Length: 119
Image 1 (cartoon, rainbow, N blue to C red):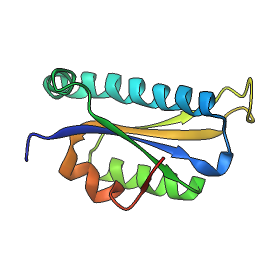
Image 2 (image 1 turned 180 degrees about the vertical axis):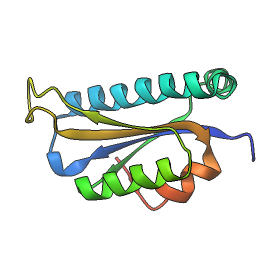
Image 3 (image 1 turned 120 degrees about the horizontal axis):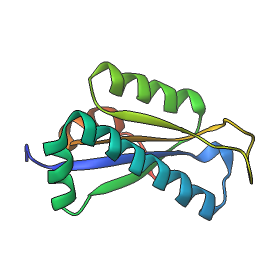
Image 4 (image 1 turned 60 degrees about the vertical axis):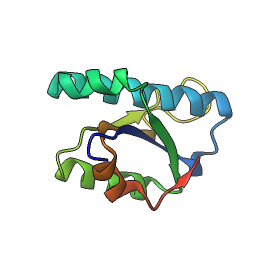
């Protein structure tokens, strides 16, 4: 379906973050990606909200894999944000922990994320 929207959150599994830390990093990625989308495409952002904010949380096992996906998304004009942790609890300051992409067309996001496993 062409109007099927979703957001993708990708978490680095190699960091071995606790469940609470993962939840907070995923929330940061979701909110920041939504805010960025709402500035560049307010109609799409509003539609995504109306659809119930569908999203999926996936994982990668390396920083390089996360950055490769980020570059591909940006190269294809899909809103994507990188989350860096402040380092107050479990990990070092400025560690890249997550990526948020979209909301965008599911078919467009799937081109770059369909191969990833669920978190």
